Amino acid sequence: MRNIVNDQNDKVQDMIWRSREGDLSAFQQLVEHYQHYAYILAFRLLGDDEDAKDAVQEAFIRVWKHIKNFNLSSKFTTWFYRIVTNLCLDRIKAQKRKNRVFSQGIGQDQLLVPTNKKNPEENCINKDLAGTIIRLSEALTPKQHIVFVLRDLQDLDTKEVARISGMSVNSVKSNLFYARRNIRERLRQPDVPGGN
Image 1 (spheres, one colour):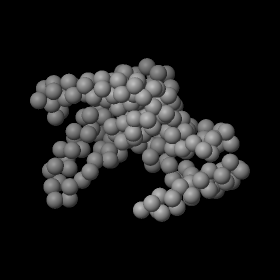
Image 2 (cartoon, one colour):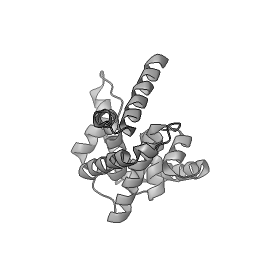
Image 3 (tube, helix red, strand yellow):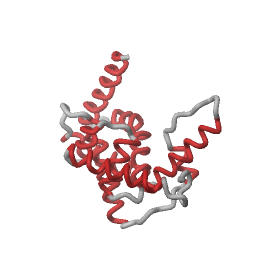
Image 4 (cartoon, one colour):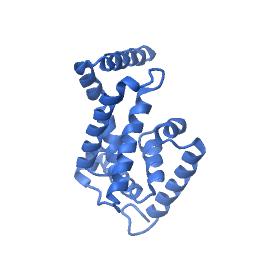
């Protein structure tokens, strides 16, 4: 498994090097490699298909413009996810939006919920619950929302979340604590699907 990861890292490093030299085909490969993950992150932050696609497209434009400034000793995903996250935050602030209605059709397809082939009913319940949690996360403060998405939905570790968000590790932990508590409290409300 380690060799596969190393090979993958070598391929990504090669794409980054060639992109820094202005190789558009290498950059296209980099885009293809990361666009799905970037879209899922942006969608979970923004809750809207078109906004997520726009944010990802803008993120790749910024990567292309600034890839020569990328520190090769850093982790590319941290740098890239930080660009995506900041663009999403900018959109949230600019739109001053309140809770958006979660788009069930788009959202359910984008949720990475483990499936149980032997129990389709359980799969449906899991998707419904995941959709509810994502919808509830949109009501969190921007910092709590970003930390919750990166840590609990993207499954990044706390230090990585801190590097991407620009927060301290303690701030990440604190915001995550409050985000989880807020979502738990909302899930207990009887008017919330899946609540008591």
